[in-house]
Length: 90
Length: 256
Image 1 (spheres, one colour):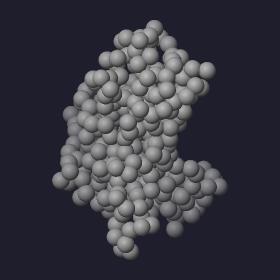
Image 2 (image 1 turned 90 degrees about the horizontal axis):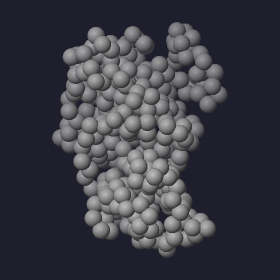
Image 3 (image 1 turned 135 degrees about the vertical axis):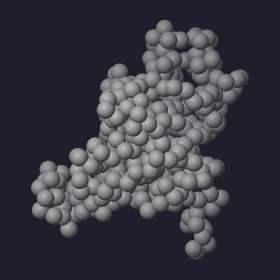
Image 4 (image 1 turned 45 degrees about the vertical axis):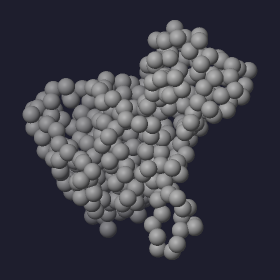
């Protein structure tokens, strides 16, 4: 089973509306690179620059925070990555 | 002790086994600071007032504007141009005259935050920006006062409860500054998140249930889903991190 990346609602415009994208990879970073290869619009949605996520992006592996150093955290087949946006409104 | 009027007013929640008369008395003795009288602050203040909190302190420096009225249900058309804390106080007093409502029309800063929340048992996050949330978070950590986080955008919202020294705090996942923008929101989103925050406050004050500690609750109103994510206390957090674990700290030294 591949790794499943759950896409935040505001980013599904870049994934043709897909809520979940299947990728292969051994780390969160590798998985996100695969995601971007499939959907290039996700690069600016997630990254400030190479290997640096935007400050508002949070990554969770199997519902547990992958912070800090999210990109190097290992994942295995069947794992789920949730990409969530920090909210600030009230 | 509850008066006969209070026993009647709160009869339905006193009937809840986890609350009872003892729990109601705890609520009556409690003092809650709500930072913000807007989209989140409105339902939080309304439900805590209805529940019989002893004292509620509303902190907000703004005036009511037309664009507030889609979500800030404490404020009505007749309040446009009025200070939000004055509008809030009037409505809350009409809802429950026994609740003491304190109001402060000031901008929360690093310099005044400690004084603004002084004497309160808990601090509730009803802010509309991250920098002020972090000011409140740091203050809560330093004062060892529970902090109830909530935030919204669009139909989405999140909530988490912070117990200083014990659980992850809002700063534990800090990545750096984010741009401040006007945020889209519909009233039903802060209605849900504000209600959850008020629920957490009540549970904490009464000492019941399971709190959203180290648990980030994400609400998606478009799909009507609640998702939960585990957040870990960060030992390197610049608000709550400590070089020593509490058990290894010399006696009398404050950890964290």
